[in-house]
Image (cartoon, rainbow, N blue to C red; front, side):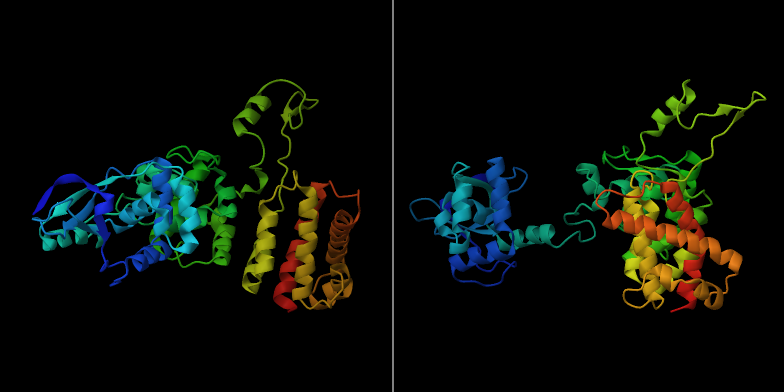
Length: 442
């Protein structure tokens, strides 16, 4: 049986030479070296030094090895808690540390007072001690052992952005009956791999600047958000579309069809980099002459201002062709162009559009040094892609405009494009042709 908890003098303990962490090692110095190299003892010692104490929720488990009839202090072997015991021994006496660790422990020791004792429990029967050690280290054992915290528990205890969006989505889904508490277990990490990407964050208009549970903001309309949430949970539970086996390219492809499958309008007209929508509503509802305010017609009725896009519009055929190409550069370029605000970053988008089309031309067979305007000539457009003269003219003009915007922005010290609407319009014009080129010319 075990005795009461007692303070055990650090200078009267020995590390266990048959620790399951390393197997039999006779030399005490080699035990210390192994624990340092393989078991993160330095990191533990650093934590102890920062706190100035050991974790009061943890005890070491020891067995007395000296003859009880002997005079002097008892001597013990540490069976449970060797990492902690080793960390304290090195903080108390840095000279015990191997040469490569010595300086670091000298520095740590300067910041903490000597720890003379460690609270522990003395066991008389090693079999009893082994039973409780197994309870701690052999995982859950169907509830008999220690149950480690999963990602959900970790996030509730110490919220960070690591799981914030997925956690809040699952909380909302459970609250409205889309998923049960048992069904959501173990799924937060898989869902976060998807919703933590820039593409799906933009679709959800997710703001995880405050990762506290219930504090992540989703700025889609309530109706759109519920449709998107319902689809995400359906795909998560279905274990085909949202799985841990999907790679980055497949996740981007999933994102590209999410809004259409959910039956919501594409978020390309919304700009997450704009100010708080509530502030915009306040501004628009108040009087004053500001951009975007409805103007009165001669008949006294107000006419709505057109809803102007702020990003490159997604072309479904081009998305499909790029994804089918398997070209990671194209996939990432097109994804980035669709989420970056052209209004705020027209120069970045101009160079990105130029790079996208130049890369597509190269994939389709353009010679080294041949510009995309030269490669996609009227002859190629009409003879190989089957476009009419009427169709090819505006496309040629749009490509020339994109080429000029990209080249000027790239090469001139002062001049650059500032016309985001022209960029968006030009890309809308050339995108169907680029999709056809990717599926026809390679």
